Length: 146
Ligand code: DAT
Ligand code: MG
Image 1: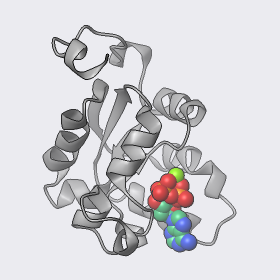
Image 2: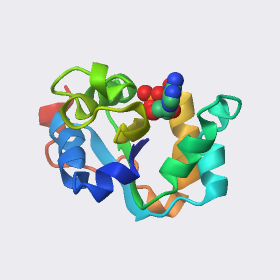
Image 3: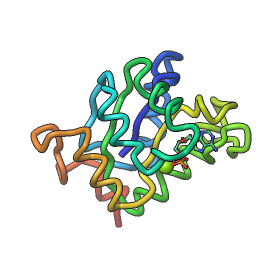
Image 4: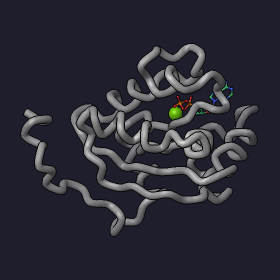
């Protein structure tokens, strides 16, 4: 589960960010633009509820539209998180999304689930079953997956 965060959408980086996951071979099974409501934001960031930055995290993710994306593929969690880069953009590797486009932790452009289990929970929080096309036959699959 990927979120192209409000700063990335506002900066016109949505296409650039989607492109990186798509080019890597990850298969898009869900994609939409939405304004995150406060309740959904608090649910999404529930593990951080007791952290001092929780309020600013909720304010940030609800501040403007986001693009959410559900991806499928070999080691999708590890691959997507490497493509996103380290949490603090100023420390993220060049070539990663955060390393190429960001500086501050509170404007770190993209979210990626940290486990398959959390990914499934997050996808269910953001998408209805009807909005997901799991396992659609992509023409290039045989050239991406062995
Ligand atoms: P990631 O987004 O790399 O998975 P995370 O799950 O640890 O990082 O934290 C979620 C978000 O919370 C992160 O993208 C930015 C914010 N955050 C994390 N640690 C923070 C900190 N020490 N100060 C401010 N914001 C923080
Ligand atoms: Mg995280």
